[in-house]
Length: 490
Image: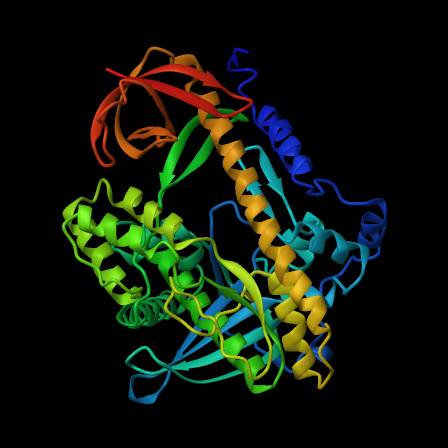
Protein backbone atom coordinates (compact mmCIF):
# COMPACT_ATOMS: atom_id res chain seq x y z
CA UNK A 1 0.00 0.00 0.00
CA UNK A 2 1.31 3.43 -0.93
CA UNK A 3 0.66 6.17 1.64
CA UNK A 4 0.34 9.47 -0.20
CA UNK A 5 0.48 12.70 1.82
CA UNK A 6 -3.27 12.80 2.32
CA UNK A 7 -3.17 9.26 3.70
CA UNK A 8 0.12 9.67 5.58
CA UNK A 9 -2.12 10.73 8.39
CA UNK A 10 -2.29 10.36 12.14
CA UNK A 11 -5.59 8.50 11.77
CA UNK A 12 -3.86 5.62 9.96
CA UNK A 13 -1.43 5.26 12.85
CA UNK A 14 -4.30 5.48 15.31
CA UNK A 15 -5.99 2.49 13.64
CA UNK A 16 -2.72 0.55 13.88
CA UNK A 17 -2.42 1.58 17.54
CA UNK A 18 -5.99 0.53 18.39
CA UNK A 19 -5.45 -2.92 16.87
CA UNK A 20 -2.16 -3.31 18.74
CA UNK A 21 -3.91 -2.35 21.98
CA UNK A 22 -6.79 -4.78 21.60
CA UNK A 23 -4.39 -7.55 20.54
CA UNK A 24 -2.66 -7.11 23.91
CA UNK A 25 -5.91 -6.89 25.91
CA UNK A 26 -5.87 -3.17 26.61
CA UNK A 27 -9.12 -1.22 26.75
CA UNK A 28 -8.82 1.60 24.18
CA UNK A 29 -12.26 2.96 25.14
CA UNK A 30 -13.95 3.65 28.46
CA UNK A 31 -16.96 1.58 29.47
CA UNK A 32 -20.50 2.94 29.64
CA UNK A 33 -20.34 2.68 33.44
CA UNK A 34 -17.08 4.65 33.58
CA UNK A 35 -18.47 7.38 31.32
CA UNK A 36 -21.58 7.56 33.47
CA UNK A 37 -19.44 8.05 36.57
CA UNK A 38 -17.54 10.74 34.72
CA UNK A 39 -20.72 12.78 34.12
CA UNK A 40 -21.15 12.99 37.89
CA UNK A 41 -17.67 14.49 38.44
CA UNK A 42 -17.70 18.17 37.54
CA UNK A 43 -15.44 19.85 40.07
CA UNK A 44 -11.81 19.36 41.10
CA UNK A 45 -10.71 18.39 44.59
CA UNK A 46 -9.83 21.85 45.88
CA UNK A 47 -11.59 22.20 49.21
CA UNK A 48 -9.25 23.68 51.81
CA UNK A 49 -11.31 21.92 54.46
CA UNK A 50 -10.03 18.57 53.17
CA UNK A 51 -6.42 19.70 53.05
CA UNK A 52 -4.03 20.16 55.92
CA UNK A 53 -2.43 23.33 54.61
CA UNK A 54 -2.93 26.14 52.14
CA UNK A 55 0.23 26.51 50.01
CA UNK A 56 -1.25 28.40 47.08
CA UNK A 57 1.05 31.34 47.81
CA UNK A 58 4.21 29.40 46.91
CA UNK A 59 5.89 29.74 43.50
CA UNK A 60 4.81 26.34 42.22
CA UNK A 61 5.52 25.42 38.60
CA UNK A 62 5.15 22.39 36.34
CA UNK A 63 7.86 21.22 33.92
CA UNK A 64 6.85 18.75 31.23
CA UNK A 65 6.67 18.25 27.47
CA UNK A 66 5.42 21.19 25.43
CA UNK A 67 2.05 19.57 24.70
CA UNK A 68 1.48 17.79 28.03
CA UNK A 69 -1.74 18.61 29.85
CA UNK A 70 -1.87 15.63 32.24
CA UNK A 71 0.28 17.40 34.82
CA UNK A 72 1.13 15.17 37.77
CA UNK A 73 3.60 17.20 39.81
CA UNK A 74 4.69 20.70 40.76
CA UNK A 75 7.99 21.69 42.36
CA UNK A 76 9.25 24.44 44.65
CA UNK A 77 12.47 25.14 46.56
CA UNK A 78 13.18 27.18 49.68
CA UNK A 79 16.71 28.11 50.77
CA UNK A 80 17.54 27.25 54.39
CA UNK A 81 20.45 28.29 56.64
CA UNK A 82 23.94 26.78 56.13
CA UNK A 83 23.37 25.91 52.48
CA UNK A 84 20.51 23.45 52.97
CA UNK A 85 17.43 23.62 50.73
CA UNK A 86 13.87 22.48 51.34
CA UNK A 87 12.39 20.78 48.26
CA UNK A 88 8.63 20.47 47.93
CA UNK A 89 7.03 18.18 45.35
CA UNK A 90 3.24 18.39 44.94
CA UNK A 91 1.53 15.26 43.55
CA UNK A 92 -1.94 15.33 41.98
CA UNK A 93 -4.52 13.78 44.35
CA UNK A 94 -6.16 11.54 41.76
CA UNK A 95 -7.68 9.36 44.47
CA UNK A 96 -9.81 12.30 45.64
CA UNK A 97 -11.97 11.85 42.51
CA UNK A 98 -11.21 8.28 41.36
CA UNK A 99 -12.28 5.95 44.12
CA UNK A 100 -11.07 2.39 44.57
CA UNK A 101 -13.30 -0.20 42.85
CA UNK A 102 -15.20 2.44 40.85
CA UNK A 103 -15.70 1.84 37.11
CA UNK A 104 -13.09 4.53 36.36
CA UNK A 105 -10.68 2.79 38.71
CA UNK A 106 -11.43 -0.57 37.08
CA UNK A 107 -10.42 0.82 33.67
CA UNK A 108 -7.23 2.33 35.08
CA UNK A 109 -6.40 -0.91 36.89
CA UNK A 110 -6.81 -2.95 33.69
CA UNK A 111 -4.63 -0.72 31.47
CA UNK A 112 -2.32 0.41 34.33
CA UNK A 113 -0.77 3.20 32.23
CA UNK A 114 -1.41 5.91 29.68
CA UNK A 115 -0.08 4.80 26.31
CA UNK A 116 1.65 7.39 24.14
CA UNK A 117 1.81 6.53 20.45
CA UNK A 118 2.43 8.36 17.19
CA UNK A 119 -1.24 7.69 16.47
CA UNK A 120 -2.41 9.48 19.60
CA UNK A 121 -2.61 9.13 23.36
CA UNK A 122 -4.73 6.47 25.02
CA UNK A 123 -5.07 7.87 28.55
CA UNK A 124 -5.41 5.74 31.65
CA UNK A 125 -8.05 8.17 32.89
CA UNK A 126 -10.52 10.20 30.79
CA UNK A 127 -9.09 13.54 29.66
CA UNK A 128 -11.83 15.36 31.60
CA UNK A 129 -9.91 14.14 34.65
CA UNK A 130 -6.28 13.66 33.61
CA UNK A 131 -5.91 16.93 31.69
CA UNK A 132 -8.35 18.97 33.76
CA UNK A 133 -9.96 18.03 37.08
CA UNK A 134 -7.12 15.86 38.42
CA UNK A 135 -4.35 17.71 36.56
CA UNK A 136 -2.24 20.28 38.41
CA UNK A 137 -3.07 22.62 35.55
CA UNK A 138 -1.95 26.21 35.25
CA UNK A 139 -3.69 28.84 37.36
CA UNK A 140 -6.08 26.45 39.10
CA UNK A 141 -6.53 25.49 42.74
CA UNK A 142 -5.92 21.79 43.34
CA UNK A 143 -5.64 19.46 46.30
CA UNK A 144 -2.30 17.65 46.31
CA UNK A 145 -0.08 15.35 48.30
CA UNK A 146 3.06 17.22 49.37
CA UNK A 147 6.44 15.50 49.73
CA UNK A 148 8.70 17.85 51.68
CA UNK A 149 12.42 17.03 51.85
CA UNK A 150 15.36 18.87 53.39
CA UNK A 151 18.43 18.44 51.18
CA UNK A 152 21.84 19.09 52.74
CA UNK A 153 24.64 20.92 50.86
CA UNK A 154 26.17 17.56 49.88
CA UNK A 155 22.94 16.44 48.16
CA UNK A 156 21.81 14.04 50.88
CA UNK A 157 18.20 13.94 52.10
CA UNK A 158 18.24 14.69 55.82
CA UNK A 159 14.58 14.99 56.85
CA UNK A 160 11.25 14.52 55.14
CA UNK A 161 7.53 14.66 55.78
CA UNK A 162 4.35 14.09 53.78
CA UNK A 163 1.00 15.87 54.05
CA UNK A 164 -1.88 17.19 51.93
CA UNK A 165 -2.28 20.81 50.86
CA UNK A 166 -4.00 23.14 48.46
CA UNK A 167 -1.68 24.33 45.63
CA UNK A 168 -1.80 26.54 42.55
CA UNK A 169 0.39 26.15 39.46
CA UNK A 170 1.92 29.56 38.67
CA UNK A 171 3.73 28.61 35.45
CA UNK A 172 3.42 25.77 32.93
CA UNK A 173 6.97 25.28 31.64
CA UNK A 174 8.32 23.04 28.87
CA UNK A 175 11.54 21.01 28.94
CA UNK A 176 13.27 22.33 25.84
CA UNK A 177 12.72 26.06 26.31
CA UNK A 178 13.55 25.84 30.03
CA UNK A 179 16.69 23.85 29.26
CA UNK A 180 17.87 26.53 26.82
CA UNK A 181 17.43 29.18 29.52
CA UNK A 182 19.14 27.08 32.21
CA UNK A 183 22.06 26.47 29.86
CA UNK A 184 22.16 30.18 28.88
CA UNK A 185 21.59 29.35 25.21
CA UNK A 186 18.06 30.76 24.96
CA UNK A 187 15.78 33.45 26.35
CA UNK A 188 13.78 33.18 29.55
CA UNK A 189 10.50 31.36 28.81
CA UNK A 190 7.51 33.71 28.62
CA UNK A 191 5.68 31.79 31.36
CA UNK A 192 8.66 32.47 33.63
CA UNK A 193 8.87 36.19 32.86
CA UNK A 194 5.36 36.81 34.16
CA UNK A 195 6.00 35.36 37.66
CA UNK A 196 8.38 37.55 39.72
CA UNK A 197 10.87 35.49 41.69
CA UNK A 198 10.25 32.20 39.90
CA UNK A 199 13.44 32.53 37.84
CA UNK A 200 15.58 32.62 41.01
CA UNK A 201 13.59 29.70 42.46
CA UNK A 202 14.20 27.59 39.37
CA UNK A 203 17.92 28.38 39.45
CA UNK A 204 17.90 27.12 43.04
CA UNK A 205 15.96 24.00 42.03
CA UNK A 206 18.48 23.36 39.26
CA UNK A 207 21.43 23.69 41.65
CA UNK A 208 19.91 21.16 44.03
CA UNK A 209 19.03 18.79 41.18
CA UNK A 210 22.64 18.81 39.96
CA UNK A 211 23.87 18.03 43.50
CA UNK A 212 21.40 15.15 43.68
CA UNK A 213 22.67 13.88 40.32
CA UNK A 214 26.30 13.97 41.41
CA UNK A 215 25.52 12.19 44.67
CA UNK A 216 23.51 9.48 42.90
CA UNK A 217 26.32 8.88 40.42
CA UNK A 218 28.82 8.67 43.28
CA UNK A 219 26.71 5.82 44.62
CA UNK A 220 26.56 4.08 41.23
CA UNK A 221 23.53 5.51 39.43
CA UNK A 222 24.01 4.80 35.74
CA UNK A 223 24.73 7.56 33.24
CA UNK A 224 22.65 6.55 30.22
CA UNK A 225 21.58 8.35 27.07
CA UNK A 226 18.75 6.77 25.14
CA UNK A 227 17.71 8.43 21.88
CA UNK A 228 13.96 8.39 21.26
CA UNK A 229 12.27 9.44 18.05
CA UNK A 230 9.26 11.75 18.30
CA UNK A 231 6.82 11.95 15.40
CA UNK A 232 6.35 15.46 13.98
CA UNK A 233 3.05 16.23 12.25
CA UNK A 234 1.85 19.09 10.07
CA UNK A 235 -1.97 19.14 10.04
CA UNK A 236 -1.94 15.43 10.96
CA UNK A 237 0.46 14.59 8.12
CA UNK A 238 3.64 12.91 9.34
CA UNK A 239 6.55 15.05 8.14
CA UNK A 240 9.54 14.10 10.29
CA UNK A 241 10.97 12.16 13.21
CA UNK A 242 13.11 14.10 15.63
CA UNK A 243 15.59 12.59 18.08
CA UNK A 244 14.95 13.48 21.71
CA UNK A 245 17.52 13.04 24.43
CA UNK A 246 17.85 14.14 28.02
CA UNK A 247 18.63 17.74 28.95
CA UNK A 248 19.14 19.84 32.06
CA UNK A 249 15.43 20.60 32.57
CA UNK A 250 14.57 16.89 32.26
CA UNK A 251 17.35 16.10 34.72
CA UNK A 252 15.84 18.56 37.20
CA UNK A 253 12.54 16.68 37.20
CA UNK A 254 14.19 13.25 37.04
CA UNK A 255 16.37 13.92 40.08
CA UNK A 256 13.51 15.40 42.10
CA UNK A 257 11.24 12.47 41.23
CA UNK A 258 13.88 9.88 42.18
CA UNK A 259 14.28 11.74 45.48
CA UNK A 260 10.50 11.89 46.09
CA UNK A 261 9.95 8.24 45.09
CA UNK A 262 12.61 7.15 47.56
CA UNK A 263 11.02 9.22 50.32
CA UNK A 264 7.54 7.76 49.77
CA UNK A 265 8.93 4.23 50.10
CA UNK A 266 10.82 5.07 53.30
CA UNK A 267 7.81 6.92 54.72
CA UNK A 268 5.56 3.87 54.29
CA UNK A 269 8.22 1.61 55.82
CA UNK A 270 8.35 3.90 58.86
CA UNK A 271 4.56 3.56 59.16
CA UNK A 272 4.88 -0.25 58.91
CA UNK A 273 2.85 -0.28 55.69
CA UNK A 274 3.56 -2.53 52.71
CA UNK A 275 5.08 -0.80 49.69
CA UNK A 276 4.78 -1.36 45.96
CA UNK A 277 8.38 -1.06 44.79
CA UNK A 278 9.86 -0.41 41.38
CA UNK A 279 12.94 -2.62 41.15
CA UNK A 280 15.68 -3.54 38.69
CA UNK A 281 17.41 -6.67 39.92
CA UNK A 282 21.14 -7.38 39.81
CA UNK A 283 21.67 -8.25 36.14
CA UNK A 284 21.84 -11.93 35.19
CA UNK A 285 23.67 -11.04 31.94
CA UNK A 286 26.55 -9.32 33.72
CA UNK A 287 29.07 -11.50 31.84
CA UNK A 288 27.80 -10.09 28.53
CA UNK A 289 28.05 -6.55 29.93
CA UNK A 290 31.67 -7.31 30.87
CA UNK A 291 32.28 -8.52 27.30
CA UNK A 292 30.68 -5.38 25.85
CA UNK A 293 32.93 -3.17 28.00
CA UNK A 294 36.01 -5.22 27.08
CA UNK A 295 35.22 -4.76 23.38
CA UNK A 296 35.43 -1.02 24.02
CA UNK A 297 38.72 -1.30 25.91
CA UNK A 298 37.33 -1.13 29.44
CA UNK A 299 37.63 -3.81 32.14
CA UNK A 300 34.73 -4.44 34.52
CA UNK A 301 34.83 -6.67 37.61
CA UNK A 302 33.47 -10.20 37.34
CA UNK A 303 30.69 -9.49 39.85
CA UNK A 304 27.95 -6.87 39.24
CA UNK A 305 29.01 -3.40 40.34
CA UNK A 306 26.84 -0.42 39.34
CA UNK A 307 29.57 2.12 40.18
CA UNK A 308 32.07 0.35 37.94
CA UNK A 309 29.45 0.07 35.20
CA UNK A 310 28.83 3.80 35.37
CA UNK A 311 32.58 4.32 34.99
CA UNK A 312 32.43 2.34 31.76
CA UNK A 313 29.47 4.39 30.51
CA UNK A 314 31.32 7.66 31.14
CA UNK A 315 34.36 6.19 29.36
CA UNK A 316 32.24 5.10 26.40
CA UNK A 317 30.61 8.52 26.05
CA UNK A 318 33.97 10.29 26.07
CA UNK A 319 35.32 7.82 23.50
CA UNK A 320 32.46 8.07 20.99
CA UNK A 321 29.50 10.40 21.56
CA UNK A 322 27.84 9.30 18.30
CA UNK A 323 27.69 5.65 19.29
CA UNK A 324 27.04 6.22 23.00
CA UNK A 325 23.20 6.09 22.76
CA UNK A 326 23.51 2.64 21.15
CA UNK A 327 25.87 1.41 23.87
CA UNK A 328 23.43 2.81 26.46
CA UNK A 329 20.59 0.92 24.82
CA UNK A 330 22.64 -2.29 24.80
CA UNK A 331 23.36 -1.91 28.52
CA UNK A 332 19.68 -1.23 29.28
CA UNK A 333 18.64 -4.40 27.43
CA UNK A 334 21.27 -6.45 29.26
CA UNK A 335 20.21 -5.06 32.63
CA UNK A 336 16.75 -6.49 32.09
CA UNK A 337 13.32 -4.95 32.51
CA UNK A 338 12.17 -3.20 35.63
CA UNK A 339 9.32 -4.74 37.56
CA UNK A 340 6.92 -4.06 40.40
CA UNK A 341 7.20 -6.07 43.60
CA UNK A 342 5.57 -5.85 47.02
CA UNK A 343 7.84 -5.19 49.97
CA UNK A 344 6.17 -6.20 53.24
CA UNK A 345 7.10 -4.63 56.59
CA UNK A 346 10.35 -6.09 57.88
CA UNK A 347 11.48 -7.49 54.51
CA UNK A 348 14.81 -6.44 53.00
CA UNK A 349 14.25 -4.41 49.79
CA UNK A 350 15.53 -5.68 46.43
CA UNK A 351 16.51 -2.21 45.24
CA UNK A 352 16.98 -0.59 41.84
CA UNK A 353 20.35 -1.49 40.28
CA UNK A 354 20.23 1.23 37.61
CA UNK A 355 19.45 4.03 40.06
CA UNK A 356 21.71 2.57 42.79
CA UNK A 357 18.99 2.97 45.43
CA UNK A 358 17.44 0.48 47.84
CA UNK A 359 14.14 2.27 48.45
CA UNK A 360 12.19 3.24 45.36
CA UNK A 361 8.49 3.34 44.56
CA UNK A 362 6.46 4.94 41.76
CA UNK A 363 4.37 7.69 43.30
CA UNK A 364 4.77 10.89 41.27
CA UNK A 365 2.57 10.29 38.18
CA UNK A 366 -0.90 9.12 39.30
CA UNK A 367 -2.66 10.56 36.24
CA UNK A 368 -0.54 8.32 34.01
CA UNK A 369 0.46 5.22 36.03
CA UNK A 370 -1.70 2.97 38.19
CA UNK A 371 1.11 1.92 40.58
CA UNK A 372 1.32 5.59 41.57
CA UNK A 373 -2.41 5.58 42.39
CA UNK A 374 -1.86 2.56 44.62
CA UNK A 375 1.01 4.29 46.45
CA UNK A 376 -1.07 7.46 46.74
CA UNK A 377 -3.84 5.49 48.47
CA UNK A 378 -1.34 3.85 50.83
CA UNK A 379 0.10 7.25 51.76
CA UNK A 380 -3.33 8.83 52.30
CA UNK A 381 -4.33 5.91 54.53
CA UNK A 382 -1.35 6.60 56.79
CA UNK A 383 -2.22 10.31 56.92
CA UNK A 384 -5.82 9.54 57.82
CA UNK A 385 -5.00 6.88 60.38
CA UNK A 386 -6.79 4.28 58.26
CA UNK A 387 -5.94 0.59 57.72
CA UNK A 388 -4.01 -0.58 54.67
CA UNK A 389 -6.45 -0.25 51.73
CA UNK A 390 -5.19 -3.43 50.03
CA UNK A 391 -4.53 -6.96 51.27
CA UNK A 392 -1.05 -8.37 50.71
CA UNK A 393 -2.44 -10.78 48.10
CA UNK A 394 -4.16 -7.92 46.29
CA UNK A 395 -0.93 -5.96 46.18
CA UNK A 396 1.07 -8.93 44.90
CA UNK A 397 -1.47 -9.60 42.14
CA UNK A 398 -1.44 -5.91 41.18
CA UNK A 399 2.37 -5.86 41.11
CA UNK A 400 2.44 -8.77 38.65
CA UNK A 401 -0.34 -7.28 36.53
CA UNK A 402 1.26 -3.80 36.39
CA UNK A 403 4.58 -5.31 35.31
CA UNK A 404 2.95 -7.32 32.53
CA UNK A 405 0.89 -4.40 31.23
CA UNK A 406 3.84 -2.01 31.29
CA UNK A 407 5.78 -4.47 29.12
CA UNK A 408 2.77 -4.76 26.80
CA UNK A 409 2.46 -0.96 26.60
CA UNK A 410 6.11 -0.63 25.55
CA UNK A 411 5.51 -3.19 22.80
CA UNK A 412 2.47 -1.27 21.54
CA UNK A 413 4.38 2.04 21.55
CA UNK A 414 7.32 0.45 19.74
CA UNK A 415 5.06 -1.18 17.15
CA UNK A 416 3.32 2.10 16.31
CA UNK A 417 6.64 3.95 16.27
CA UNK A 418 8.04 1.45 13.77
CA UNK A 419 4.93 1.90 11.61
CA UNK A 420 5.42 5.66 11.72
CA UNK A 421 9.05 5.23 10.70
CA UNK A 422 8.05 3.00 7.79
CA UNK A 423 5.36 5.50 6.79
CA UNK A 424 7.85 8.38 6.78
CA UNK A 425 10.34 6.50 4.60
CA UNK A 426 7.91 4.76 2.27
CA UNK A 427 8.21 7.31 -0.53
CA UNK A 428 12.02 7.31 -0.27
CA UNK A 429 12.68 3.81 -1.65
CA UNK A 430 16.09 3.84 -3.35
CA UNK A 431 17.46 6.73 -1.30
CA UNK A 432 20.83 6.35 0.43
CA UNK A 433 21.57 7.19 4.08
CA UNK A 434 24.47 7.25 6.49
CA UNK A 435 23.94 4.84 9.37
CA UNK A 436 25.55 2.97 12.26
CA UNK A 437 25.27 -0.75 12.99
CA UNK A 438 23.28 -1.21 16.22
CA UNK A 439 22.92 -4.99 16.26
CA UNK A 440 24.71 -7.93 14.68
CA UNK A 441 23.76 -11.46 15.67
CA UNK A 442 22.27 -14.65 14.32
CA UNK A 443 18.86 -12.95 14.45
CA UNK A 444 19.94 -10.31 11.95
CA UNK A 445 21.91 -7.12 11.43
CA UNK A 446 20.33 -3.78 12.32
CA UNK A 447 21.30 -0.22 11.48
CA UNK A 448 20.15 3.19 12.72
CA UNK A 449 20.08 6.16 10.37
CA UNK A 450 21.62 9.39 11.59
CA UNK A 451 18.61 11.28 10.27
CA UNK A 452 15.82 10.56 10.56
CA UNK A 453 16.65 8.46 13.67
CA UNK A 454 15.12 5.28 12.23
CA UNK A 455 16.25 1.70 12.77
CA UNK A 456 15.84 -1.01 10.17
CA UNK A 457 17.19 -4.37 9.08
CA UNK A 458 20.21 -4.75 6.83
CA UNK A 459 19.09 -7.57 4.56
CA UNK A 460 21.85 -7.38 1.94
CA UNK A 461 25.60 -6.88 2.40
CA UNK A 462 25.54 -7.49 6.15
CA UNK A 463 28.35 -10.09 6.29
CA UNK A 464 31.24 -8.94 8.46
CA UNK A 465 29.34 -5.98 9.88
CA UNK A 466 30.09 -5.16 13.53
CA UNK A 467 28.18 -3.14 16.10
CA UNK A 468 29.35 0.46 16.04
CA UNK A 469 30.50 0.35 12.42
CA UNK A 470 29.35 3.23 10.23
CA UNK A 471 27.90 2.18 6.89
CA UNK A 472 26.20 3.74 3.88
CA UNK A 473 22.88 2.02 3.16
CA UNK A 474 20.08 2.16 0.63
CA UNK A 475 16.39 1.81 1.50
CA UNK A 476 14.85 -1.07 -0.46
CA UNK A 477 11.55 -1.93 1.26
CA UNK A 478 9.01 -0.73 3.84
CA UNK A 479 5.79 -2.21 5.22
CA UNK A 480 3.74 0.24 7.28
CA UNK A 481 1.28 -2.15 8.93
CA UNK A 482 4.05 -4.33 10.35
CA UNK A 483 6.63 -1.58 10.78
CA UNK A 484 9.23 -3.25 8.56
CA UNK A 485 12.14 -1.25 7.09
CA UNK A 486 14.80 -3.02 5.01
CA UNK A 487 18.15 -1.71 3.77
CA UNK A 488 21.08 -2.98 1.72
CA UNK A 489 24.70 -1.97 2.04
CA UNK A 490 25.86 0.42 -0.66
